[in-house]
Image (tube, rainbow, N blue to C red):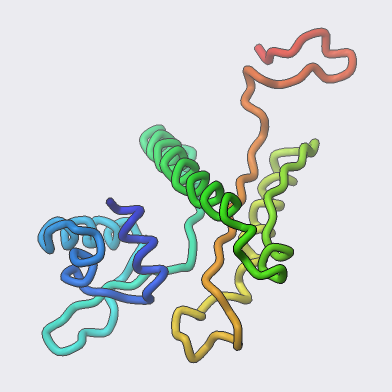
Length: 181
């Protein structure tokens, strides 16, 4: 529910609990509860009141799921959120690419899925993750149609930067084994 609310707010810019309820099929009270929870953890913020209406807006156009590593609960919650995000993005990608033949050629050429194996230190991997996030900064603030260039279309970037899990690590030359101990 919270992911759905986040995605909706990112799409429309800002919305009230009533508008969110109409979009999600949930009750206004349920949406209001989840919106307040998202605000409590810094994902969204209150917008400018419109008379008696109290809209909410996303604090960013995406989400960085790097948890506070000193908190086992935060690490576990980030893992659960990552699994939900992966499932939703996988469904979106599959739906797009299964119907890509109907897209204009320019949009087909602009779309991609790629994977790449690299060898990196933890510091290098962290820097790469920061660079991926920074790449999208030039697109910030385009929820308002007046700020979009002609022909702009709502698009998605889905990226993951992670080391191989310890139990799946391949042996390094001279290592003698594939498992870390």
